[in-house]
Length: 487
Image: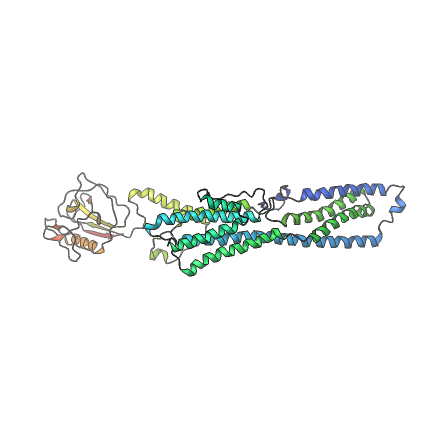
């Protein structure tokens, strides 16, 4: 099938020769024009002028007009039927693809996700995807008139030899493969490779059965051509019109040039429409205007392969923010450009934040600056970056909340922790100890108790996997202060 764009004025594409009926129509129109011009010069020779001036007369012209009307009606009727057949063939093949792909997609959606069955599930998926590619290719081969019926299949060379030999000798290959697919789905359901309720399981077979019915409708277009008497009478009437046009126009025209031009235009139009009908009546052939069956098979294979990808097995995660997402904002853009912009932005943000970048947006950051101490403790939940000056001596996690500590950490590595009670306890520890710097220990005011005894019995967390403490040195000469901020 020829893909084309009409452009602004709709003229440039008309100059294309591939797939055009112009050469065939020209083959009939040009000889008719030459014959008509020669007849005009011969019949209007002075020796024959008295007889020729009478011409066919008004009655002959009326008969010629009626005959041309009947021929025009028949070829227009045939061209309409031909286009209907072409469009029906295109529709049926696309419906066939949709039905069988929906069946495959349903099987993929209900695959068993149990970890101990993944090897068997993957094996079932690869058997099914090869059978579906083979099934669609076999269907196209049954309706196609292509030489050799060569289509692209997902490799199935590792199927057992006995089955392949049986398929090779069968005269109904498509029906055999369809039966294999249905049996494979039944076996997968019995073995729990797919976990699907019976009503939805029946829909798989419904899609497969609909595809078989659609295929039979498509085969009808090849098995039932335009009736022979109609095609025969149209062809003979066009030949008779060709002869009548050359004679009538030669006698009725005043100049040989006009005789040639009029004859050429009439014959070119009638035979051009006739050849359009012949091009469209059989849409599954190998002509330039027939359906792109090779591309259809490749498109089916492409869709099947994409559905086998790991990312297609589960829906994408979503970082929901009630304040941000409740408005349901819309953006006008093509899907490809919108996806490209989002992916580029996320990649850039990840590169800027380095290994400390998290997938989820920041929720809160608690900054506690303890008064009169050379170092303060920052606690963070879900934040991405914190920058602060660092001194030379690092501190251990067990001494991070002690008063009077003089150590400082390097640029912090912050990790999220989800224990809200522990977070509140640490805030209370810091706020209650925000007075003059002493060696006393702040006591937590609320449960839960955290592991590790410090000083007078106040419990401080010692599990660095669940809570990351980062010590940052306090800027010099800022005096005595106490700050609490949440971002």
